[in-house]
View 1: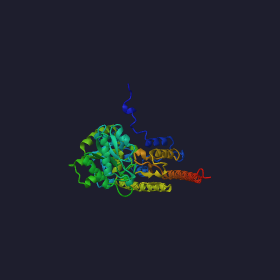
View 2 (view 1 turned 180 degrees about the vertical axis):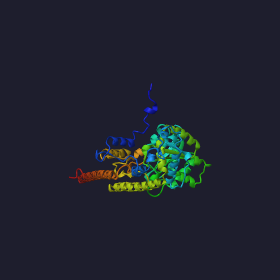
View 3 (view 1 turned 135 degrees about the horizontal axis):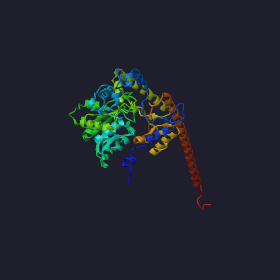
View 4 (view 1 turned 45 degrees about the vertical axis):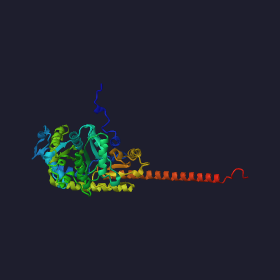
Length: 470
């Protein structure tokens, strides 16, 4: 008799992905400027640590919020007791206003349509439970966040069918790619329930164009399926073109509550990236479908946001002077840090996809591969992790269709650590290229030697006298 469930013993979590294996290697030998200066530098974790000083400054200036007080009086007992899983109204109001502010107040959100979850991971999984049956599929453009294999599939039984995007057009979504993915799902006898995109993209660090977003709305409308827009990096856009939310597209198209598409578009959000608070576990899903909101609210009891967290962040996000300054300064610092990464990569002879958002760059190392295969990509990745001591994420873990791309994060470390990482990488690239050049030079010499041998042999053969002529 089996003592454990199939879920407990199956290998569908995705933990064996190189994305997570890199983390494990980092945890065994983490870099520390003083304690372990030769350790592995973590460049595979998309955390935003650039504005902690702004958050800490606000906390120092607002001791009541940090001390769980209201008008100088403790509300610890009030917050310690059980709270309705609908969430604190003050926090939901502050959160949707923050979401609108990030989007330039071009769109507004109804606090009654938002469901709080313990991070975006929980929000995405909850949407899968609400929208799909086990065996149903969602289409995702490649490359995509490796964690989706866990978040969307592991417990829900849903399937992912890739929308194959390529570097030929900077990995943008095309109508042909959408249709091909839909046909591929049908060949696998999978019922497609929707399309899920990250905008801004993880791992590309780019925002979706207005044309792409309209294409998605047209496609999902024609197929009568859902559209999920994961917008957890919406506040990290630091360069033009700016961020366009899917809600802005619906507004431009005059979609209203009377249209079916209005109820089939859903948004995932979190404070993990924009505010740099992944440890607070604050996520949310937003939907105009009352039934989805009701079901998701019931499910949220499995992953609530603590009342203490909600109270603290309600006060912080309600401070409009603070949020205005934070959004602006955060984008400014991200732009500066991304520029330093790109500059360091260029000095190492490495280019990357032009990006305008996110906490990472999509880096092109195809020229460092010995052959154009994913096996060679993993071999290169192993050298970078074990020899160079940098944990970066290989494109294959993101289901990229082309070997040699890597996601490299830049906002989870100090400027000095980033500089060191680039020095390490440049030294490795210089050595690798020298080895390649020597190998190529030796190959040319061997080729010339072989050609000369053949020429001499052919000459001596041709000069022989015919038999019997002497």
